Image (cartoon, rainbow, N blue to C red; front, side):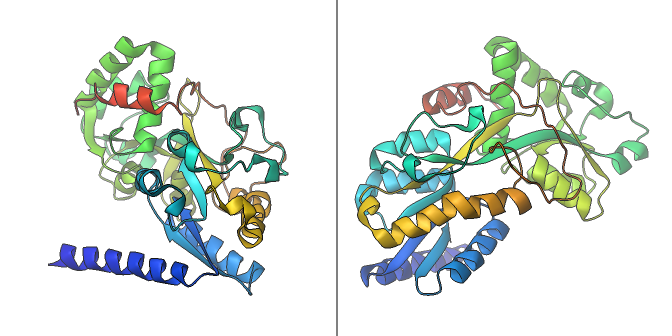
Length: 324
């Protein structure tokens, strides 16, 4: 019964948005960000544009891409924020050229090859450890992927499932890039002996760390830092191959390049609000001059080889080999 009510509520929200959209004047932003980031963005938009009705809707990246792919320019969204670049590539025929509106100076690996979207975010990972749990079992702190294979850590490690989590996939893709496909999957087979859970979501390992159910998690750095700042005994360690990551983008749905109201909001988001998001919520570097006001965030992070992370066909091919 509870699932039915949730489903009906979701339908009601969608119908409400369609109704508002049909009346005109409302700007719909599909955002794939976490809710706390969406809440801040909604509040800033209301402050910046008190005369406009701008609605920020959370839509998971794959669902947003599928919806836009089917509905094309008839979709209710005007702007997309924080969609994984692999899915941006999938729907790019439905996107308007918009890179020319960006005034920010990006680092080299955050410059897009296509003018139909700009980079919004770098989602990066760490080996995150709970020192209280390690001390409980009198275990040393691991520093390398090889260390994680020690039988002493059996049942004390979690990793996101690459089939359901972009975080899990970027850990896998980095291992494939560095070790080669055969050796990477052989490594995962050995690591699986120590895994307590391949979590459905990218945040799963951090939640298990905070609950004290595991000692080591492959997870998102910013989530680990957030929990550390809340008083949890966590440490974020950069793997020996660098911090793996994926990129997300921001874009304009085709047709909105001629709408001055939508363009004004879009230009604010990619030139001003993006900077706020980096400074206070998700600070992995994408800009040459980028401040980070998040306490205890790692500095001078060395990023991993993520060549091909935006290739959706390659992702599907690799995930077909995943058996956990």
